[in-house]
Image (cartoon, rainbow, N blue to C red; front, side):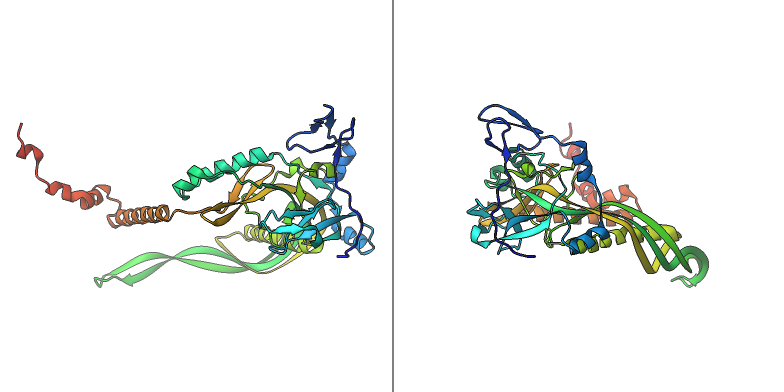
Length: 394
C-alpha cells in the first residue's frame, strides 16, 4: 500500500456541553461528562443503520477500487517486529505494547496506510473489570492446572481492548457435480469354521452407481478474519453479528484497533474455502445412499456481497513460573480461551483413569456382558478371606 506523511488527528468523543474529551464505556449508549455532568448519548439514525448493514456488491466494489473511487480512510499503524500485527495508533502515541506478543512499539516504526473504511462495529460489551473477572473465573476452572496456579493466579495487569478487522460475505452458489452413490446390500456366504464345520453368514457389500447433479446453496455472513495469521482461538472468535452498529470513531475511543492484512480478494478466496465444505455436505445429501464419492464439482458464485467490520476482543498474557501464556476474551460475549500451565500429576492421573476405564470395558465384553462374573473374577479374592464370624463367634 502507498505510504504517505500527513497529520492524523486522534479520534475523540467530545462533550456536547463543555467540549471535554470523553471515553466510551462498554455496554452503554451514553457517556456522562465527569466535568459538567452532561449526558452525551451515542445515537444513530435509521439511515446510518441501513448503511451499517448494507451488503456491498463485491465485483462492483473491485471495479471502483481500481479507479480509486471507494470509501477509504487513512490511518497510522505500527507493524510489530515480533509477530507482524499492525496496530492502529494516533500521532500522539509515543510508544505502546503489542497486545499479541508484548513487544514494545515506538512511533518511529509507524506508517500511514489507506484502508477500506469499516462500515460497522460491535462495541465492547464488557469493560476491563468485567473482562478480568471473566479471566479469573476461567483460570480457576482449569481442572488440569496446578492447584497453586488456581489459588494464587491474579488478573493480567495489562489487558488490551482491541478491535479486530473482519470481512463478511454473502453469496448464492450453484454447483454441478459428478460422483458415485454407494448402496449397501447383503449376500449369504458359506465358509468352514475352525472345527471344520460348514456354516453360513451374511456379509455386507456395497454397490456403486455413477451419479451427477446440481446443488444450490445460499450463504449469509460467512466470517473471514482480516488477519493473515489469526491468533484468536475458535472459542473466542464467535460474535452475534445482529449487534452490529454503524461505524463511529467515537466507539473506538480508549481502545486499540488493528489493520487488516488480508485484502478483499484474498478474503473472498478464504470464504470460498469455507463455503466449499458446506457445498460438499449438500452434494453428499443430494447423492443419497449409504456412502458417497465426489469426483468433480464446479461452483458458480452469484450476487456476492461483503461488509468490512470491526469486532471486539481483550488480549493479554500472564506469567507463571517464568513462562508467559497468552489469553483472549471475547469483548461481546465474555468467553475466554488461552493457554495455561498443566499439572503433570493430574495428567498422569487422568491417563490412569482412562486406562482403567478401557480395561473395564474390555473385561465387560470379554465376559460377554456378564457383570456378576466379571465382578467375581476381579474381586473374588475376597471370598478367600476367613469368615470373621467363625474366628470370633458371638
